[in-house]
Image 1 (cartoon, one colour):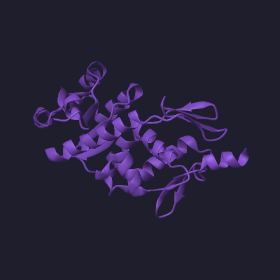
Image 2 (cartoon, rainbow, N blue to C red):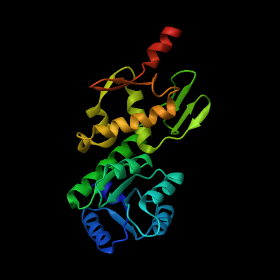
Image 3 (cartoon, rainbow, N blue to C red):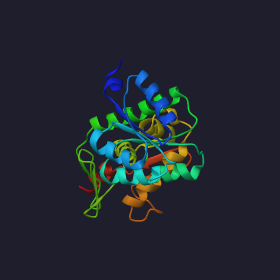
Image 4 (tube, one colour):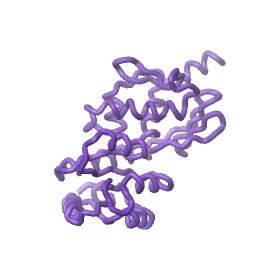
Length: 242
């Protein structure tokens, strides 16, 4: 049994007790520790007291829906969240991602698919946390400190969601080089997401709105049409200016 399985605590949130039991049995069989909640209020309390490594969060709940719960979680906590829903509409997926969800899985799903998604999110979260970099001064407008998870634009701190941090990290680490959609998907979301290029486009747009002076004419995150994205080669620009 791997260290990841024995140490990872998963909070399962769903008002359907049968569904919670189904997920709990399968995750425990795979070695995860499971805590449960059956409504939004319980979920928020469990996040606060149990400090889970990941939250499986159903959208359709009677008291507070999953989107509201996610919004409240993100106000105080960056724990990875995978949204569960019986719907497959793209609007729901985008709304969850916009609020800071790390992934999205539609019911019905197989235990194998669920465990695969959980492991992918845990892997990339752990890798990002362990791989720290020094403070990066891109230019007079933009400064990045990944070790503190802080980004400063024109002297003001900008809040980024966990997935936005990971995407920015991989772009900046390869500044000056083109990152294909497939490379970014595998590094930021996991190998299971090779066929989901809209994730990359969506989060690049989020980053541009937060970092760029004019998001419609970006200076930092540049589009290589039909291929992917490239972060400006700030090191070369600094060398030229010195």
